Amino acid sequence: MGIIIANIVAIFRKELQGYFASPLAYLVAGIFWLMSGFFFVEILLGPEGVIQQGMAMDQLGMATQAEDFAYKFLFFFLSVMGSLAMFVLPMLSMGLYAEERKRGTLELLATSPLTNWTVAIGKLLGVLTFFTVMILPLLGYEAIALSAATPPIRPAVPLIAHVGLILLAASVLSLGMFISSLTDSSILAAFLTFALILFLWLIDLVGKNIGGPLGTALNHLSLLENYNNLVKGVLDTSSLILFASYIILGIFLTAQSIDALRFQRS
Image (cartoon, rainbow, N blue to C red; front, side, top):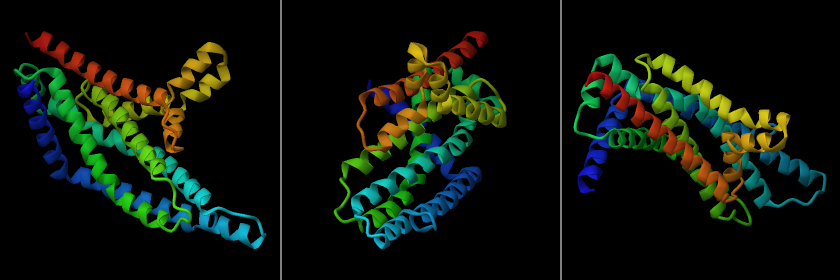
């Protein structure tokens, strides 16, 4: 077990160092920060932002609660961040294995003593850590905005909401890692990952149109539906299980994909 953990840590450090040395990763992070900052200002201070809504209600003499507006801001902002992440995450996952294929090092990786699960977990932890670093500035913005709420918002609400964002990212990156293992084209991997995530993001619309047991089952598979449950501050066990299932499925399929390559080369 100690050797397995050491190998995972080694792969994790290699991947993380690669992201911090990649100009493309910094470009993606810069675009993400620019867009998230824009939406943060618009949702909080824009003409239709939550502060303007609160002032309008005060002028009309309607009773307001600061905690409700803080909760509304957090839900709107993280909902937008979830949608924005859907575009950013495929760009982070596209090169996890595709670049290995392009450079011809995937065959060496497939025939190395390292298990496929070890490599997949290490790669996933590396890219997920980089994404977590990307959202750290957002936590500072939110902390400043929410600190003005009276009464203060319950700490469990933003905690569960951000756990939901991390689980969403881990699910998308895990599935994107599998798709990246199937091709040597990073662009194609990003496009296919986006298409898959968009389908899983909106599958609840299909479920609502179908109805019945099948429609209910499709609703449970929706990334959007389960992400919104957590963003609302509701610790939904079924949502946690679904995200964990997507993460494990992505790692499993990736390991099987590399194992198939190892079998071809043997």
